[in-house]
Length: 258
Image (cartoon, rainbow, N blue to C red; front, side, top):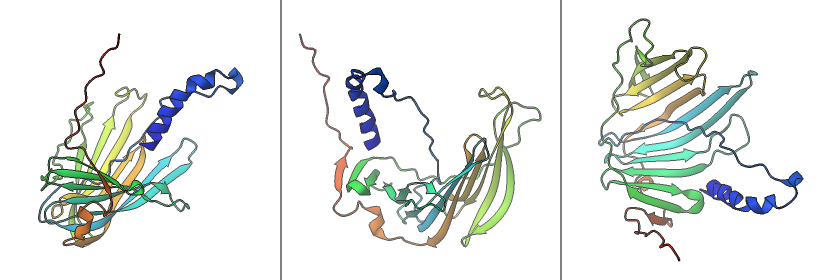
């Protein structure tokens, strides 16, 4: 939110800057690009309590073969009632000196049908209504598209079973071939996603996405502890200011003035 506010202020101040000389005129902000990682999905399943760490690695290779590697490690947990806690941490350069601090924490409560989003640096939490998602994700059982098909439906390959952190998982690889011209590409694009799904926990313990447009994104769950986590994780931090968005105040459009 701070970045958006600064950007808006910059636009408001721009006309005053233009009144100076053309040599000192600042550049206008352009659209830019924002990328978002979609990490491990944790459904609100009851009676499947655990805590663990999600380890993220994002590797991108530039046209000159420069590799950029960003990482973070964040805490996740779910209690027997199905409440889910997650940290969100800054992605930082691998083997760098920048700290991967917590940018926000999230609590999804299917019992009270609430979601808290807390910003530790501001000691503020907003609460809103959220319908529970109690259904576990199931591993895909798709079929291979016909030979020569231009469909971008994934080709699905079973990889067998594997034990991760003492938990049995089922492996699957999805491959998608995007034909030339499908999205403005002048040649074929090959993408894949490999994941190892735990029926016991109802989530992927490993998910690897390989796509030349975005690089390789790897999410791996480690330090798995089965059983009830610390109950304090599922409540807003003590002393937090609560912003309640469940019943926002009504507002009226301003009346036109003569």
